[in-house]
Length: 223
Image 1 (tube, rainbow, N blue to C red):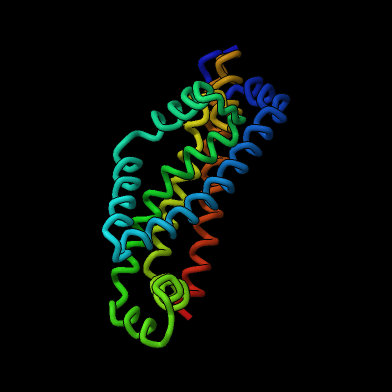
Image 2: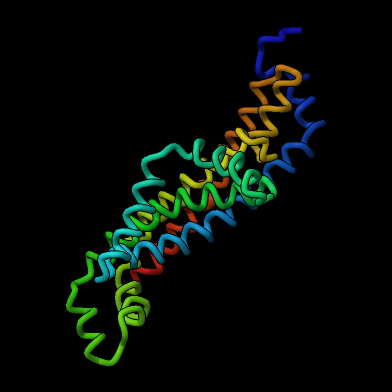
């Protein structure tokens, strides 16, 4: 029996027998991906618009959020949230902590993608909309954002794919995600090869499916 061979049949049989563990981890990862993606898009639009808002205070709030989350490691942010919240008597499930942590982090990058796309639209578009009776937010929502969608979508797509891979940070806080389950299972029997091959394949499938869907959206915006 070759214990050093990652492709030994008995290791793959053991993994197949423990498939429910990996399915549970994959389900948790998908839940975090969906929740964090929704949160990051909402934050990205809000803070992206705030980044070009005429009010200086609003712009400062945007920069504080973006600079903080872009310039500190995600793993530190998630561990801080995980350990700090109980001290202020806020108890949340690890799944929700993962959604909030990854969503806040990715939202900062989404905000920059939105802000850059908005700045690419001629300022006269907003002024023309305001002259027709729109307020600033209506002009952004109905005039500027639709025009900037083609520009912001590729950048936001890249961040969405990074978000999928960043969910693996939950393994640091026993989040029950795919990476955590792979670490736990392989650590108990030393079958690291099959565990990480399957885990890597799962992440690749999710990212590939997401990239194909986003590519379809990009083609629709070009029509």
